Image 1 (spheres, rainbow, N blue to C red):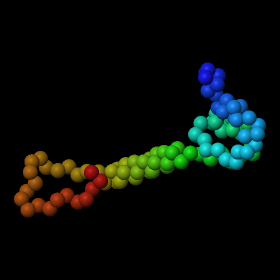
Image 2 (cartoon, rainbow, N blue to C red; image 1 turned 180 degrees about the vertical axis):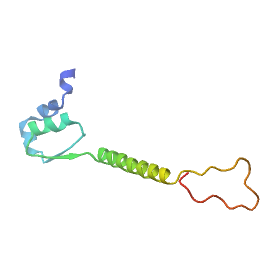
Image 3 (cartoon, rainbow, N blue to C red; image 1 turned 45 degrees about the horizontal axis):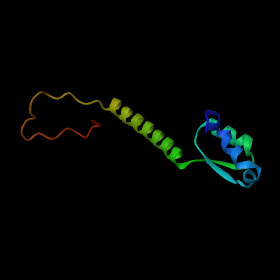
Image 4 (tube, rainbow, N blue to C red; image 1 turned 90 degrees about the vertical axis):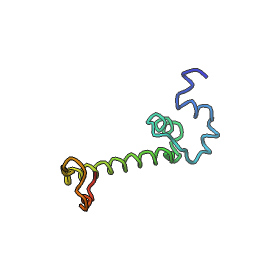
Length: 99
Protein backbone atom coordinates (compact mmCIF):
# COMPACT_ATOMS: atom_id res chain seq x y z
CA UNK A 1 0.00 0.00 0.00
CA UNK A 2 1.55 3.30 -1.11
CA UNK A 3 1.26 6.66 0.64
CA UNK A 4 -1.62 7.73 -1.62
CA UNK A 5 -3.64 4.68 -0.48
CA UNK A 6 -3.49 5.79 3.16
CA UNK A 7 -5.92 8.63 2.60
CA UNK A 8 -9.32 8.27 4.32
CA UNK A 9 -11.18 8.11 0.99
CA UNK A 10 -9.30 4.92 0.05
CA UNK A 11 -11.37 2.91 2.53
CA UNK A 12 -14.62 3.87 0.84
CA UNK A 13 -13.11 3.34 -2.63
CA UNK A 14 -12.27 -0.24 -1.68
CA UNK A 15 -15.77 -0.90 -0.34
CA UNK A 16 -17.48 -0.23 -3.63
CA UNK A 17 -20.94 1.18 -4.26
CA UNK A 18 -22.93 -1.91 -3.20
CA UNK A 19 -21.32 -2.20 0.23
CA UNK A 20 -21.37 1.59 0.79
CA UNK A 21 -25.13 1.54 0.17
CA UNK A 22 -25.53 -1.06 2.93
CA UNK A 23 -23.77 1.03 5.59
CA UNK A 24 -25.93 2.53 8.33
CA UNK A 25 -23.39 4.00 10.75
CA UNK A 26 -19.66 4.38 11.15
CA UNK A 27 -17.49 5.04 14.21
CA UNK A 28 -14.84 7.66 13.49
CA UNK A 29 -11.77 9.13 15.05
CA UNK A 30 -12.01 12.85 15.89
CA UNK A 31 -9.92 13.80 12.86
CA UNK A 32 -11.69 16.19 10.49
CA UNK A 33 -10.34 14.34 7.43
CA UNK A 34 -12.27 11.20 8.42
CA UNK A 35 -15.53 13.10 8.81
CA UNK A 36 -15.09 14.91 5.49
CA UNK A 37 -14.24 11.71 3.60
CA UNK A 38 -17.24 9.95 5.14
CA UNK A 39 -19.62 12.83 4.36
CA UNK A 40 -18.48 12.87 0.72
CA UNK A 41 -18.44 9.09 0.18
CA UNK A 42 -21.53 8.02 2.15
CA UNK A 43 -23.66 11.03 3.11
CA UNK A 44 -26.63 8.84 4.14
CA UNK A 45 -24.98 7.20 7.17
CA UNK A 46 -24.80 8.25 10.81
CA UNK A 47 -21.35 9.31 11.98
CA UNK A 48 -20.43 8.39 15.56
CA UNK A 49 -17.36 9.27 17.61
CA UNK A 50 -15.49 6.29 19.03
CA UNK A 51 -15.89 5.89 22.81
CA UNK A 52 -12.15 6.11 23.50
CA UNK A 53 -11.98 9.73 22.31
CA UNK A 54 -15.21 10.70 24.08
CA UNK A 55 -13.82 9.45 27.41
CA UNK A 56 -10.45 11.08 26.69
CA UNK A 57 -12.07 14.50 26.12
CA UNK A 58 -14.31 14.08 29.19
CA UNK A 59 -11.30 13.28 31.37
CA UNK A 60 -9.47 16.35 30.08
CA UNK A 61 -12.48 18.53 30.95
CA UNK A 62 -12.74 17.02 34.44
CA UNK A 63 -9.02 17.57 35.05
CA UNK A 64 -9.30 21.22 33.92
CA UNK A 65 -12.25 21.78 36.29
CA UNK A 66 -10.38 20.09 39.16
CA UNK A 67 -7.32 22.29 38.62
CA UNK A 68 -9.47 25.41 38.43
CA UNK A 69 -11.22 24.56 41.72
CA UNK A 70 -7.92 23.67 43.43
CA UNK A 71 -6.26 26.93 42.37
CA UNK A 72 -9.31 28.94 43.44
CA UNK A 73 -9.28 27.30 46.87
CA UNK A 74 -5.50 27.71 47.20
CA UNK A 75 -5.74 31.44 46.44
CA UNK A 76 -8.64 31.90 48.90
CA UNK A 77 -6.87 30.00 51.71
CA UNK A 78 -3.11 30.45 51.39
CA UNK A 79 -1.00 28.27 53.65
CA UNK A 80 -0.16 29.91 56.95
CA UNK A 81 3.42 30.54 57.91
CA UNK A 82 4.41 28.39 60.82
CA UNK A 83 7.21 28.83 63.25
CA UNK A 84 10.37 26.91 62.60
CA UNK A 85 11.03 23.77 64.60
CA UNK A 86 8.72 21.28 66.25
CA UNK A 87 5.20 22.34 67.27
CA UNK A 88 4.75 22.89 71.01
CA UNK A 89 3.75 19.83 73.01
CA UNK A 90 -0.02 19.48 73.27
CA UNK A 91 -0.76 21.89 70.40
CA UNK A 92 -3.57 21.17 67.96
CA UNK A 93 -2.88 20.28 64.32
CA UNK A 94 -3.39 23.07 61.78
CA UNK A 95 -6.90 23.52 60.35
CA UNK A 96 -7.76 21.57 57.22
CA UNK A 97 -6.31 23.60 54.35
CA UNK A 98 -5.86 22.66 50.69
CA UNK A 99 -2.17 21.98 51.18
